[in-house]
Image (tube, rainbow, N blue to C red; front, side, top):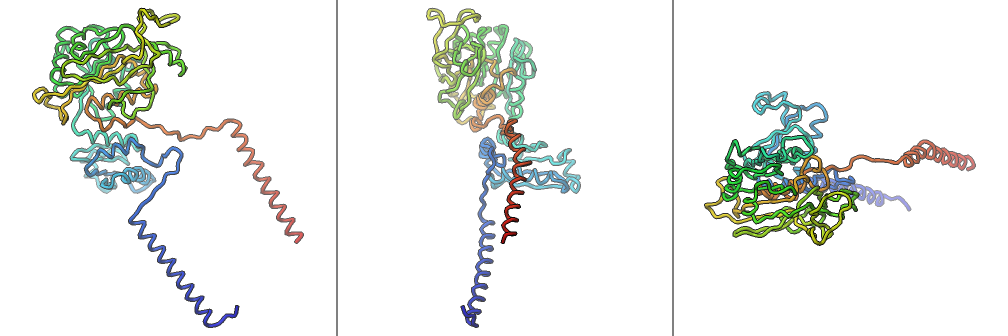
Length: 458
């Protein structure tokens, strides 16, 4: 091709046009990056994205949320916290983060009692809460507590051998109680023999497996609480009602004799016949979207017959292969058609009634004015010894959320624990080590020799 003045001019124009178009494309992409944002998390367990629980908690915060971060400019802490908070901001556009250097704002630090570098203050609808832990679980717990608004008190009856929410024994329920506190609920124990009055601000009264009978006067106090529209969680056991017959009669609940035996637990390598396992659930707000199995040791079956004004639905039902064993739970245990009660058996029931305006407690703020009661024929599933089995913890949290009228939080699990480690077998480790230390260097050496020989011959 002959180079002329005209061809040179065309090449120059093409080069100029290319530069202009290239710069223009870069400018358009830069402009688009300020208007649109796309992010993709390619990690195996999504550790750089928020869990469904956190997204659900954010969805319940309708108003603007402000976070004040007190952190020094030096060090990587500021960057790490900002990255975690940015994940929340992607789902909530009206969440603002203000970074304050505690070294230059001593008055603000003293006013808010900031003591740790990296401490955060969450503010929502005039309420605030401080947080020093940098993890998604802690931040989401703060969001849940702020979304609740008013204080919710769980009152546990004491003095009759009930499971202690502050006790560390295997049969106590301290671990579950700590999870409830982490969600913003307040716990209190009362003994009706010394304090014959259930507080008016009680969100849920908990009767957790008594071992001795309640006095008639105590039963009257509990019945009056129910008549006023109070919510109740009753964890019964196969041992009996312990003087709460009048309460059971008011609710229409009957405790079946014997203990539930479920042979299907053997498929889960559980050899104890007194363990009942549930993997399928009835349609109920407590178990809506619930897909984890739950284990109930030494449980009793329930029967429900609706009383006037009350409605009830079973949400925990054992398999058809189970039965209520009325004989001795020892040796070879078989179903006795003449004595035992065949399954499926009701293990948990949710009972409700619509309150009249004069019956509704002053502290209640439920538009439907619905009173809620849950009766479960087992308290062991929430005990310190068995809470970590299957979905027991999540079911316990769902029950309290429903009873305390926090339906929007039912699908939020108590915790997430993504796998962040790589476990290699000894064989895999040897193969990888042998490959990197011997095979790969040898291949590089052979390749270099082949190339050198070819060039030498050329």
